[in-house]
Structure formats: C-alpha cells, structure tokens
Length: 507
Image 1 (spheres, rainbow, N blue to C red):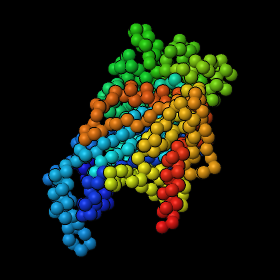
Image 2 (cartoon, one colour):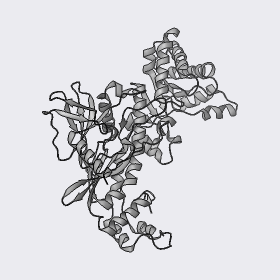
Image 3 (spheres, one colour):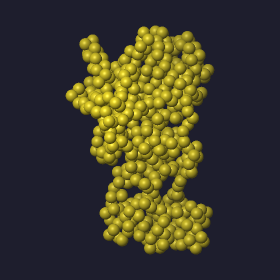
Image 4 (cartoon, one colour):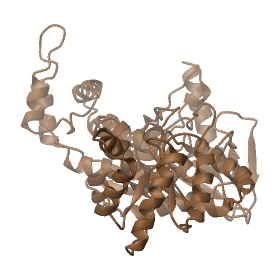
C-alpha cells in the first residue's frame, strides 16, 4: 500500500465520512474553501503577502489516489474501543466503488500568484464525502509549499537581481525536500543544489565543494592549495573554491588566486569563490579587492551560511557603506554576489507553519446553495460564508489595492461604484468610483474529475510571481513592518455574513 496514497489523511475524515454515509448526506453537493488567516510573522520581520504553491502536486495526487483492495483492508482492520470494526462493510464497499475524487471540481488561484489572508486559494465543489476526504492531503501540500515559496520570494526581494541558490536539502524535512526545492524555485530562487529534483524540474543543479574536501587533503599531509588545484584539474571550466576552511583572507584567498592564475594560463576562466562564515560583507569587500587586483573582476563571490532575507539585506547595506573606504565599487560588487540560502528558507525560519484551513462554506439544499458559517470569539476566525467569487482590484496606478470577495450571484462591474467593506469591522469601508479601478477574477477551474491542464513549466510559475509582486504597493513588499493589504467584502456578502452571525447568536 502506498503510504502517500488516499489514506494519507487523518482518521476523522474517514469517520465523518461514515456519518455522512449513514445519514444519506454523502453525495449531497457541498462547497469547501481552503485559505489561511494571517501572513507569516518571523519575529523581527514580517510578510505582507504569500506566494501560492503546491497546487500541481495536489492535482497529480488527486488523479492517482484511490481506494483499492489494500486500502480497504487497512480500514477493515481498524477497531473501535469495543473491539468491533470501526467501519461498516457497506461503507467500505461504497468507498471502493467510489474509487477516488472523480466527482470533485476545483477552482484555484493559479500557482505562483501572490495570495492574501482570508482569500480562498482553492474552492472544492462536489459530493460531501469526497470533498471532506480531500482536506488533509490538500492542506498538507499547499500549506508547506506556500510557506516556503513565500520565504523564497522574500529572499528574492532582498537579493534584488543577484542569483539565489537553494542549498537546503540536507535540512529539509525528509521527503519534504522535494516540496521545499520546488517551492523555493517558484518563489524566486534561480537554481538548487538538489540533483534529482533540479533534473525533474528541468534545471541544471548548482554547487561548489564542501570543507571536507580540503580537510581530507590536510589530514593526508597535503595543502589547501593542492586541494584547490585537484578540484580545478577535474573541473577547469567550473571552478568555484571554498575559502574559509583555514583562513579566508590569509590562506584560502591567496591559494585560490594561485590556482586561478594556472587556470588562466591554461586558457580557462575560473567561475568563483565561496565564503561560508565570518563577516560576509567585510570579507566580500576584501576578496573583491584582491580579485580585482589580480585581474579577475568577473569572478563571482558566493555567500552562504545561515542566510535569510534580513541577513542579505544587512550584508548589502554594509557593503554600500563600507566598500568605498577600501576603493571597491559597491554597486559592481553587489552585482557579482551569489547567495546560497539553505536552512532558513526550507524550514521557513521563524514561522514554521502557515496555518491554512479548509472550511465548509455552503451545502446544496432544495436546489440552491445554503451558506454555512462558523463563528468564534476571535473575529478573524469568523467564516466568510457562501458560494463566492474572488477578484483582485487594481487602482489607477495598476497596483493591487484590494482582494474582493463577492457572493456568487452578484455581478461586480467596473462601470459601477464599488463599496469595499472590512470583513469584520462595520465602521470601515471605502468606495471606488468607475474609472478608478479595474477588476481581475482570480480563481480558475483546475480539476473536474481529472486535472484540466498538464504540469506547467517552472518558468511560467516564476513569471506569475514576478508579475504579481511587481504590482504590489511598495509598502506591502517591505521586509519589516509591511503595510496591511486590504481584503474586502462586497456590501451583499457583508450583509449575508452579518445576518448569519445574528441568526446563530439568537440560537
């Protein structure tokens, strides 16, 4: 039995399914939405948006996942507290005949696009039982990949135009390394050190060498320079040397320069050096100065070692301030830097879980959608109910100014005034006049019994992210204390929400 098959779920999904089956509700059309409640807060810095990822792996999994004989036998073996079978044979027969998720339709935000709190990422419509069984697997995939793609996008923002390499496979959560690499590349990393995953994604992998190679030579009575020379002889056109095994400036750099001189005499161009520890900004300045002096102005300087978006920002700021003191062109130095980001990207350092949720928002009753709501003492947890449409609203500058949730029945038009209501505060609203805004529907059909498009090239997903981030207000893109992006309801949806909350509170 495939441990990542259709039983890759929580038990309560299956027990709820049996309740629906017993009550005859299992095939009642239902509508669920997946969304998250707040952007990542890393402590010293915060995200003003996320980057949606994980959709393609979910769609592929949905096509494969099914109840076969092994899965049914596994469920048959489960016992309740009385020792009796947990699941009835009629229910198990139904699951086997149902197979998988062929009855579901998914509408989703296109993968790679910017997302915001409370806005549906995926809308799932279909038989209540099938839609319920999808919850765990759906959240497992999109929560983690969205989290990592968001971190990678922030690293990309901090790095500017510089190359970013994903170095995190050794620190990723086991097989989650595949998702981490994919999400990092969607979010803005240029390459990854992971060989098989890069190949499957259509990219060459990137890397240098580890301290252990130099250590091995030293332990055997050889020198650091001999270790560098051995690497250069095997990879004369791909030589990147790690400088800080012994001493970056007084050992690694002079030894690397001698090896680079030999390569040049042989007609080869050295590619770069890597620095993995110490004051990376100061060391970059000094290494650049010596490389320039030796006639290697094009050699790259790869920085690694617990980097994240804030550290990269600080490195760049320090270089801009200090480089002129040493006669180094700061802007030219920044253009030759490459950032190798590992642990802090693939574990989303400082914010380990997105907290995305999957909620029932409507169920079919007498031929219409009956809206469902959940209330809470926490205002942000009060559900936005019903079958909905989702729009992105752009202002006169062409920048995204709000995401708008509307009832499915209403028509939102650009030639009519648009009132944007705060989701929970009745005193907060703003009105946009015709000509002041444009609308973009966000959710697209992605699955109707089967996936509706093949896996998209990575560059398509990367370009979606790039375009969406470029259309965010600079305040929302800030790495620290970003501006809060507006998520709003139409007047009609706000009124429906108020009505349902009042009805529940009255019992």
